Image (cartoon, rainbow over all chains, first blue to last red; front, side, top):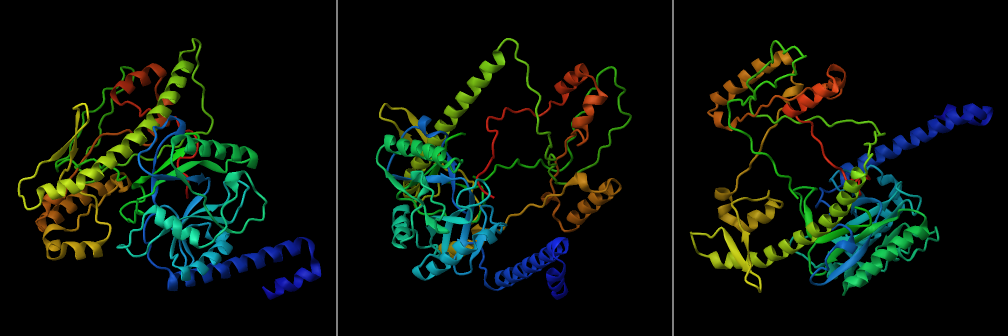
Length: 248
Length: 238
C-alpha cells in the first residue's frame, strides 16, 4: 500500500487510478473488518420482523375504516429495523441490510437517541430507488424492547414526537436537498375518509413536484394497536396496519 | 401471513400414470420410478425473457378483457383488504367472549355466532390449529407447569430429491427407511411423489413437438398459467 502511495505522486495518470483503486479497496476491507468486529461484539439478536401492513388496494376504491386511524406516507425505499445502541440494521426479512453503510450518519444520530429510550427503530431507508434524499433514514415507529410493554400507536407516536426530530418535508412537495440524514415521518389522524383521500392525492402531487416516485401511497395505522413484535415469519401481516398504493 | 402448507401424503409413494403422448411421438421405453421418502418436490423458479410477445387482438376482445381484469382486480383488492380488516376486528371482539364462555368447560363449541341487525349470521371459528410460538420465555411464564405437557417442538426436514445424484437415490432412500425403522420412527417418514416434467422440458417442448402436439400434451400436463396484474416490483423492501 505504501509503495502504491508513492507511485501515485511520481507517475500520476493511469498508475494514479490503480493506486487510488488499491487504496479504496484496502479502506473498504478495513471498514468491513471493523464492521464485522463491531457486529460480533455488540449486535443483539433480532427483536422482531418489521410490521408488514396488509394490502388495502387503491384508497379511492376502499371502504372507509372503522375506528381511529392515522395515515403516514408510504415511502419508496427499503425497510430497515435499527438497534440504535449498536447501530445494527436489519432488512424486512430479518437479514442484515446490505446497504447499511449508506446510512452511517443517520445511524449515528439514532445512537444518540438510545439514551432517550429509542432502542429499536422501525425505519425506511432511502437509497437507490430514486435520486431524492439518498442516505436518509425516515423514522416510522418505535418498538418497545420489553415484550410486556405494549404501547398503542398513538402513544408511540407521541414518544417519537417528543424526540424533536425534524419532520420529513417531502410530503409537502418540498425538497431543499440539504435535509438532515434522520427524519421523522409525518402522521395524520384520520377523522373522515375524505381527509385521508386528500392526503393520498396530495402525495401523488408531491411525486409530480419532486419528479420521482418518491411516495408509493399511504400506510394507515390503527391508533389503539400495539406494535406486532413477532419472529414467527417475516411474511406475517399486521391487521392493524394497511397500505394503500397508488398503483396496485 | 403464514403460508399454508400442503399436508404430506402418507408413506408409500403415489405415482401418477404416465402421460399419454401424441400419436406422432414414440412412447418412452421406461419412465423411472423410485420409492420416495417424505420429501416435497419444489418447482424450480422459471426464468423468462424480458420482452414479451403481444397477444394479437383482431376483434378487440383481448383489450376488453384486460380492462375488465385490471378494473375488477383493483376493486377486489380494495374489498379484500377491507374484508380482512373487518374479519380481524370481529375475531378480536369474539376472542375474549370465547375464552370467557368456555372457562372451566371440557366441551367446546367450534364457533361463535355473530348476528347482523337484519338477522343474518356469520360464525367465528376457533379450530385446533395454532401458529408457532413467537416468544418462548413468555410462554413459559404464562403456561407455567403446563408448558411441557402441552407444547412440544415440531419440525420437518425437507429433502430435494431432484438434486440427489441419480445413482444414489434408491440406496439412499432404502437406507433412510431402514434408519427410521431401526429407531421405531417409520411413521415419521412420509412421502409424496408425482411425475413432473423435467426443468429442460419447458423450453425443449417447443422444438420437440409442434403446436398441435403441445396443445394435446397440455390436456395431460397443463402448463401453469396465470394473469399478472402487478407488473412492477413485488415488494417495497430489501
